[in-house]
Image (cartoon, rainbow, N blue to C red; front, side):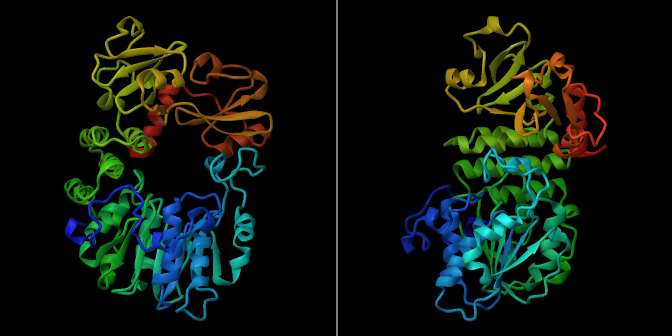
Length: 467
């Protein structure tokens, strides 16, 4: 989508615009959406405004990926206040797996939630939308098994396109029902490193869409200009793009974006190229993402996760053992050296067991990541191969490290699972997923042998990219 297609929204920026029509309603985002969710205050107001002021009842409202009901509540309260649409009952169709995942713990659900991975979230969702239940038709389960039979779609909120498979299904099953000149497609994951299929597809379909709105958050929405031929929508988009097309289409998506949004889209470009095994080009894209000015630390999460798809020898050519990299900031790479954290400027010679003597030349040695962040003056985040606490089960902490989930008995206290001697301690378990590890803890699955961290990391890369 070029700047000419932006409908007056240029450049794309991560900012709340006081003159936006949803802001002019004079409402508070927290009031409109008090439910813990993955959407921002501005996005909440935007969805409320769409259902309240834009919606005319010419089609249905699809709420794709509602989790605990945040987006549903925004749309439902907007529909209730809509003075143009009658009847209103059942006009919102809400889709979600409604299953608990450990990553929700501490974010949209409290750390001490009793839920286990795979448990149903549907009771929580229904309780959250109870006052507006009459407006909503709930569709629990995998959306790729769902067929759309409810007629034209006027508003299509998409926070569910988490894979090529789901994305292809949405294009084939729902997009044919969009109304030319009227329908709004709300891509909530547009500004996210991990959904590059959205950028590639929307750029390929640019003759059919115009950018409509850019609320502050991860969202970019589009208005359908003319009907998309069925044969275009039926194609397998995962096989539709060559490496050269990826570069061209992603560059078009990136062109109107500034600041943090530009960094995020460059990270998505890196992921798309890495999927095609164009690793050198992917490394160049994440390097460009880190150099965007003005820099915003909000982009660091996306940049680091995009880097995880690129082989370490390309990202850190001057670091002898890329498996020692445990964290990163915009300008530094953090290695684990024995019991210390060694922060190396990305422009320095490298990091090895003797990094401490280089202090003062772009190398910093500290005892914790918090100390590293304080000394270098930058936000530091663990890389995906670093140790992350993902939850607990019975008397075990569940830690993610080197592509595996580790169970550490609480009686052992704080344990650095990156150290091989701790991986071998009595009672420590290792599994490929939280579900598998919980099965081991409950005695339902035999304990697995702990893999060597470097080998586990290479196998994780292999699962990403194939043979």
